[in-house]
Structures are given as structure tokens and as C-alpha cells.
Length: 136
Image 1: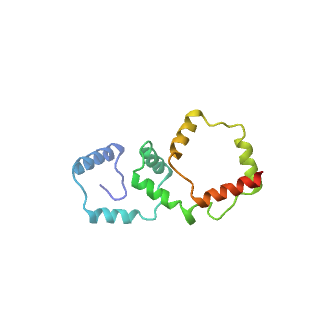
Image 2: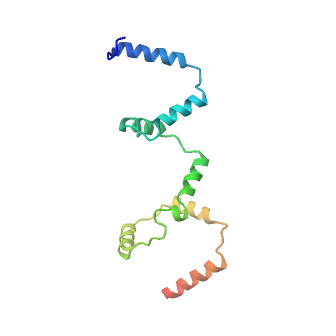
Image 3: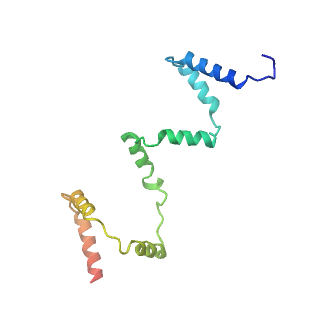
């Protein structure tokens, strides 16, 4: 092939098929895979590629280990709302949005089951008692 010329679409398709056939059942060495990985480092994926990657993951649940790591990543100082407080206006809006909403009997039953066997600590019971006294 002359320098500066390109393969036709048909020729490219055949080359691609032959390459795929050659690699079927074979694995590339760790050294080769590392080199290929480093060559792509820092290069962003195109929108089309990101969409395909997203669709490939759709419907697949995260493993328990991954879910645990995701949970840990959002705890304490890493949580986006850590150290912040909602304004009175925001609290009022949330309260208004929740007015008139009722939890279904099934959900109430499940919540009840989840809390059975759990007891408040002495400290928590005192806090609840103080809060109720303020309401009276």
C-alpha cells in the first residue's frame, strides 16, 4: 500500500475480522495490557463510547464489596452535606411537600418489623423525654 493512501471500507472490515479471528481464545500478556492502558491514560472517552459503556452496565447489580465501598465513600467528612445545616425555609418547604402523604400499611408493617427487638439507650430515652416535655 502506498504511503498516504487508505484501505477501502471493505478491506478494513476484512482486516478487522481476521484480527478478531486471530485473537479468539488468546490472551494478551500483562506487560502488553499495561502498555496499552498507559497509552490511554488521561485521554477522555467520547460521548458515544461513554454511552455504550453505560448501556453495557445497565441492569447489572453492584457486588456486595462494591456497595460497601460506595457506602464508605459517602460517610462522615466525605458526605456532601457533612457539617452543613438546612435553613428554616428549606425545612418548611420539605414539611409542606410531605404534608398529606401517607405511608402504606405494607410499608408501616415492614418498618415495624425492622425496629422490633431494638431498644433505645438510656441517653436517647432522656433526650426523647426532654423533647416531649418541651412540647407540653
